[in-house]
Length: 98
View (cartoon, rainbow, N blue to C red):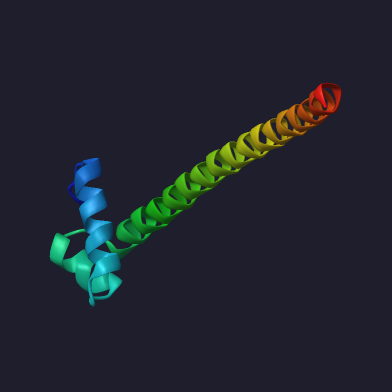
């Protein structure tokens, strides 16, 4: 009978470094996987997970930026209304004095 191999576990740092090496380097998937002693399917899965996490982070940042932009636009509108009220009040009082 074939001997059962124990399942290996890898740290997040190792996975991140492996994906970084794959994305930054000039080597292909199979070359990087062979150098690290892991299967190509495993490295491919890590790359997919990394890219998905990156796009999720980018989406979260974009949503936060949109919310901040909306808040700032509301504040600008409120301040513009205040300025208009003050202009009208200044004109009213200027007529009363003269």
